[in-house]
Image 1: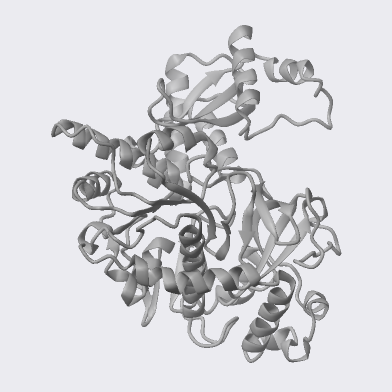
Image 2: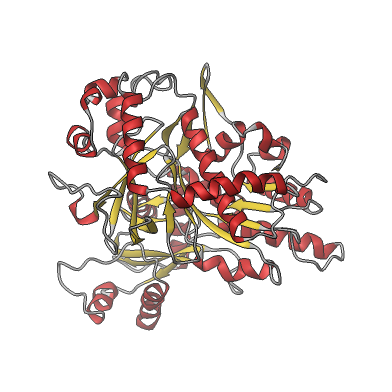
Length: 509
């Protein structure tokens, strides 16, 4: 690509940046909710909840209870699926983002309307506007934009209705002006075999003047390693994508990947910009440095509510919004969106570091989850897989914990380590079969885990370490956590705590 569209883009993005900086988040959120309620008033959901009479945020909160995916699915989406027409949003829903991580099955189907696609594009443009303002020398539109996502192949569910990965929907509905900058081309984007796709896109991108790179850090790191190896093999010592200006990342904690990623861009002024895109909507984007929070997307077709985590499940939980949020409180996130989601609990938890211009940090999940590499395993799936593996070896599990081991010099691929206390001794053969059965069960139950394990290039095999009988109780006591009110942590994402457990298991063997 020889044409540099950056100067023209800067003119457009400069105006967008000025509007973004002047946005009043409280007024914007009032306006968004009023528009969403008015638009959805003629739908089945709108009639059921008296949208025609709703005038304020408080009216909405009285009329519309909080709901989970399972409650929205069984109450409104399941029976008419795949044709949702005037059910929770006017017209027919053209797309469903398929996402793992629900207790009701291997996948969930999140409605994606054309209004939501416009919302996502607008949020992406805000990210570019922030980048252009922060990096005045960047030539971000002087070459291709590389989005490393899943297959862009979609499943036809009905006439005019498609389902698939959110990145596939984004690729299919990319604005015409943006298609000229998109990479990889369709023949590569459609590939479903991850190993083949990685190899071919790495090769195809070698001589491209990639200016923007977008993807999950764990996937992108593997790509960069492949590109570096290919360059070295042909006698080229330069680092991958020497003209890169912007790396957009999200989906998982970036901290474990930051140093290794930065090494690939050493000596260059690459802008690392975090985003918070969910299947349900584009929630936020970084407008400051690492750890300073992600700016809430208050004027993008979404209305946000925040429920103190300890109040979830109570009869009348407090429902905060941009006007009432407090800093340093762990909140569960509920969304009302232009895809027909209303007071919908997405399962994430956040904490605000700024409330005047709402900026948040992602703190976890409302139910414990393991997603160090984008695998999105929920507790129920892990429990079921452990039970299945124990049954396969004719043993019982007294207790267990699991945590991630990130890629490093000694472990080029990340993996899960399970510290397991069996009811009776387990030899090496039993431990190997336990690991194999566990891995197979998780792949069967969770699409994202299976994708990350595919070909052995995203995650290595799970590793099993044995805790001797009584070990977990002794470890808990040693930490001052003995007694019935203190539960063994199932998922451990704190590196030091996980290492403490592993060290204790080894020293007790």
